[in-house]
Image (cartoon, rainbow, N blue to C red; front, top):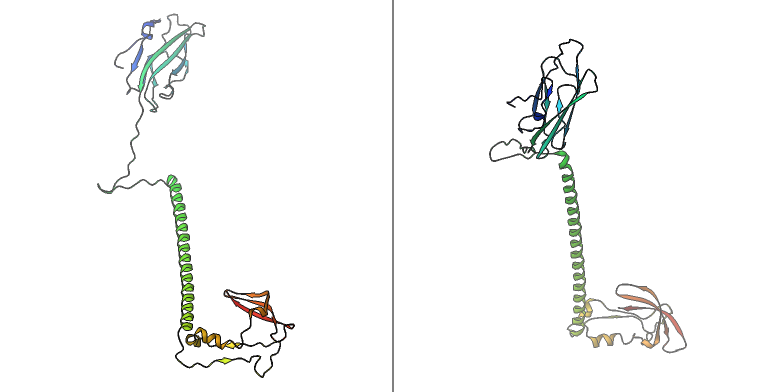
Length: 299
C-alpha cells in the first residue's frame, strides 16, 4: 500500500486504526509490517514477546497466510520489517476475510495486549489455458496422444471389431450352407421329374421297333421250381421306353402272382425308395402249402 498506518505509537494502541477492515487489491500478494520494541530509560532488562496467528473464512479460495518470521518469539529492538504472504488458491471466485492476531507480553507479565488486523481480498478462479500441440503448418494440426486414456478406447474398439467380424463370418457360412442345401434339393427334384417323365413317355408311346425280352422260368416250364428260386422277369432299362402299358402287362402275365397269395410280415430292410419284407407265399395248386419269400416294395 502507498500509505502508512500506525497501530501502536508511544506505547498507545490505535484502536480506531485497528477497526478498519482494509481491502487489499487482488494483484497484491504480500503485506509488510514494520515493528520494534523501544527500551525503557531505566535500562533494566526489557523485552516484548509476541505470538502470531492467522485465520481465513474460506480456505478453499485462499490458503492460510504465511509470514517470513516465526509464529512465536521476541519483538526485535531495532526497526525491522516482516512480510505476510496472502496467496489465493485459484479454485473459485470469492471475497476472503483475513484476520491476523498479534499477542504482545512485556517481561512475562500476565498483561497481554491483543492486536487484531483485519483485511479483505478478492480471489478469482484461474482459467487454465488449453494445451495445443505445435502444428507443422497453418492448415494441419497434430492431436495429443495420451496412452493412459487411449488404451481403454483402443481395446474396446478392437473388441467390437472382432465381434463384428465373427458375426459376419458366421452369417456368410450360414448363407453358403443354405444355398448348397437348396441347390441339392432342386437337383434331386429335377432328377425325379426327369425319371418320371421318361417312364411315363416310354409307357405311353407305341412300340416302333422289335424288342426281345428275356423271360425267366415259370411254373409252366419244364424246369422245376425249388424253394429257393422264384420266377423273375428281367427287362432292360432302355427297352421300357418302347413298351406300352398293355404290352408290359402281357409280358409279366405268366409270372404275375396275386396279392391275396402273399402275406407281408416283418420289415427286414428299409431304404430311401423302398422296403424289403419277409412274407409268406401260398402255393397256387395246393393252398395248404406255404413258402417264405422276400418281397420288395417301392414307396
